[in-house]
Structure formats: structure tokens, C-alpha cells
Image (cartoon, rainbow, N blue to C red; front, side, top):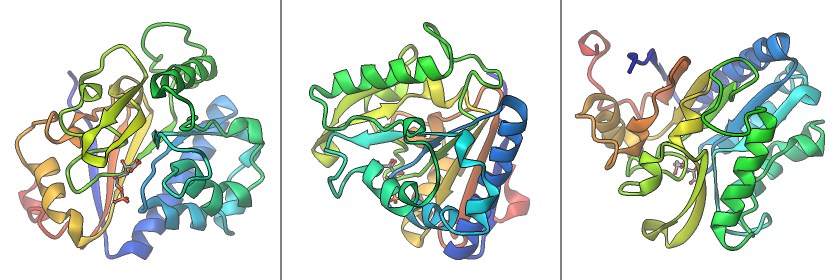
Amino acid sequence: MATVDRHVEILPGPTELTRAAADRIVTAAGEAVRATDRFVIALSGGSTPRALFALLATDPYRGSIDWSRVHIFFGDERSVPPDDPASNYRMAREALLDHVPIPSHQVHRIHGEQSPAAAAAAAYERELRATFDTSEGPPRVTPGGRFDLVLLGMGDNGHTASLFPGLQAVRERQRWTVAEYVAEVSMWRVTLTPVVIDAAAEVMFLVKGAGKASMLHRVLEGPRDPDRLPAQIVAPHDGRLVWLVDAAAASELRPKEARP
Ligand code: 6PG
């Protein structure tokens, strides 16, 4: 496996982190639209990205993206209805989607209300395959055949998307999306798998806060153990891997000169 071109950027605080992420998204969107006439992004869930979504929904960021060319997917979803407080889609809709002129058919949510969750996962994979014009096999690692950008967060247990420690989804090598019951959070989840994440042109982790410092050190500088630290499984085949972290989350990382 080719070595991954990993870039870790430490920002002073949450405000600078959010701004740096928004700047990167504007740049990536412009590059993708110029190259393929669209920008296909997967949004992360949880709480960290809310401030980023709100910033993207305000000028100058709002006016710097051609929303008519944007397709929004989700990295994962809880098995709840779209208006549930736990819904990643609801958070993105409230903070971003209700405030930008993106055509509704270009917002591709995971149907968390669908039961069984495996049916929602299968339907989502069909939607992804149609978007990337790849009816079977792995995503094409070419412009237009893959995500231009996948946003990810990292839990304090090392999970990312809904790839939780010990789940089979972490090692999935065929399917692009899977559903799995996550005992740790007592709910079914639907998640993108490394198959489609690693085909992306760019993967950007967003991690903030002292509460993530210990785990960030383990994930970035500890032994490779993706079954227990799923965030380590992410390794784009031919794309950028960027970690945008604030100083509090980076407080246990080795000094820059000591990092490989
Ligand atoms: C989810 C997210 C998840 C999230 C991490 C970090 O559905 O919960 O997709 O992977 O990114 O749990 O969440 P916070 O940003 O809230 O710490």
C-alpha cells in the first residue's frame, strides 16, 4: 500500500480551526467544479462540524461556493428519523442546508428512519454508485468517480464516521455502505466504509478540544491498531489526508520536530 500523504495542521483554537476548514472546503469546491462541473462532499456528524456548517452558510463563504454544483452526502447516520435531535442530517439541515441555495435533489441523506437499517445502507450505496457511475466493484479513483472531499470527525474512543472499535464495518472490503448495531451507543448506524472513503480525492478530519488529546496522540502517533482505533483505517489510495486540529486537541502530540 502506498504511503499516505498525511498532513497535520494545528490551529490555535476552535475559531481558527473552523475557518481553516471552511477555507479548505471553498478551495476544494472550486477545484472540483472546474475539473468536473460538480463538487461531491460527504459531511461528518456529531457536534464538531456544526460551527463549520454555520460558517459556510454565511458570507463570504456562502457566496464563494456554487451551491448549484454541490452534491452533499453524509459519512454516517444514526437510525433515527430525519427530524430526530440525534440525526446528523437534521444538524446539517439546521446549520447549513436550510441557508444555502443547494437544489434539494442534490442533498443525499441516509434514510435513518428506514428499517431494517441494512435496507437504508443498501439504498444509500445504490445512490452513491449512481452518482459515481460505478454499478459494481470499487469506486474509480478518478475525478468524478469518487468523493472530492470526505469530512470526518474522531470520537474520544477512536471511532470515525460510524466505524466503531471492534465493528466488522472497519474491515469491509466490498460494500461502500453498511449498517451495524453499535452496542457502545445502543443504536443501529449506517456508515460509509473505508472502501469509498479511501477512494476520495481528499479526506479531512476535524478534531477539537482537550477531550480528544489523548486519543489523537494514540491515533496519530501510537501503534497501528485500526480494529481498536478505527480512525487509523483511513488511508486514501490517491488523495490527501488532512488532520485539522486545534491546540487543545493537539496538546499530547509530540513536538513538530519529533514527528515523522
Ligand atoms: C457521528 C459522527 C461521528 C463523529 C465523532 C466525533 O455520527 O457521531 O459521524 O463519527 O464525527 O463521534 O463527534 P464530535 O465532533 O461530536 O466529538
